[in-house]
Length: 195
Image (tube, rainbow, N blue to C red):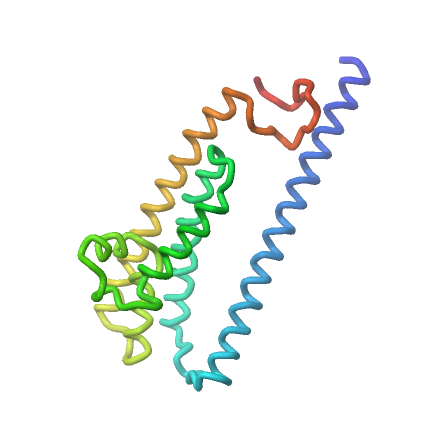
């Protein structure tokens, strides 16, 4: 192998390592931003809306963590459509609006028509919010456990569907070579590509 080819491979490896490090750092800052936002919301709830600090029990924290994980799985599912759709922001904004309308945060689910209630039962946050409402008014019981198990089941189903929906379009896009592999921006064949 000539020295020029070795240099290209080294540049590609360093570029890949840099992009992975950059991606890891950006995820850390997103997580940090989310934690700071959550803390600000709790402080506002306590100071302005007289939210009792005693509701932040272990059960409530478990519900919050499971709801966050469920939202991440549906986000992964929506993100899988970003491979094939040119503008994923429209889909995200539409879904967020429907999610807040149907999950029971702003309107009781029991007031919705029956088909929308069925749709709400497969969305994230629906069962978690119901469990949190029960925890505000009482201790952890079997009904809260059942609601949280439903939330975990929804999370697992969304994660499996997301994984499958991500892999199928990814292979199609890689076959058509419309995706940028390993962060290589030149038009030449990527030296790190296995094809």
